[in-house]
Length: 448
Ligand code: SF4
Image (cartoon, rainbow, N blue to C red):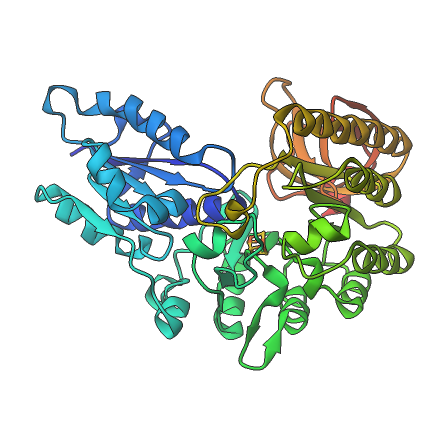
């Protein structure tokens, strides 16, 4: 009998990618094979994100296209998961008749039961918040500990869920709930299982990853413990909040070889008044002081960031501070967005008074400056040596593999015989677009 097939389309952040991987594992253990083609699937899930612009419109327009899968009475179950599902809930079932399941980020472990109910003809709404212990347990139930989700040589582990920060522009605390941290033992067990199953790199994930606290341990203790695990080559985490960052963490990063020299530390805006309106709980001076310290003790460190331009009332002068911070820190990558209202957030009560053209012009200036900085950095990397963790084949160039430096820069490396998970010493020879080009320094057997 042909296997049942399932397809998951994911929008948004790394946490959503991780949730989709978990859903895929749950479906696989329920007998489904995953497919990249929704037309071949009996279960199609859309894992949504509310962070980017017009998220609801994007989801409804995708659902409009998926409607055709049910043409002629085909038995396909369509589900909507994630933040938009949590926020819109029943409205999705009302508005889009092709949808059978709507469930939030706390509820995907119930997928087999929800699918069974949909097969009986029910339309399922499951957006209930789990609380306390229940939510912690739902990170990864003991009986599913063996079903870790690896992506090539990388394993992603959710260590916290939800967020208590309530930054005024952000919908996450309303769609993923209050923050809970998972027990350290449970995280270490999942990490060990991943390493036994071939992971070389582990990512610790959380909306505010460094506010982790469980059983008297904080993020420092967790990072320290995970970084000592046998077999681990690289440890990354995302996203930390500047307010919860401290010099001890910078020191641990600098001294522990497994912790990669890359930090994604969002600063959002350069003006202190704007940061206060955003409820970020730090000043730009605090941010820069922490960055200066970590750079002083760890000059190789690469830092990336998030920026929002055109937050309500942001003046030209305040925006100029954003550019000044970029000039000083010289980020390796910037994810920049024009502010747009998220209904239900505190900022939605403020007048969105920065004109669209001004936001566009500010965004263009941020991107232009970053482009210049990136070019200079890429040029300066010529001749430098790095270890590259191979994570896939180049899509168009035969005999070329792709990977990342410790600083998270993408690199193309010659060597069709290389395998995912190989750690290869290279010398940078140049760059194309934003990808570094490299030559191998020694053959693989010498570097393994
Ligand atoms: S820290 Fe702020 S921006 Fe990040 S998830 Fe929490 S509320 Fe949103």
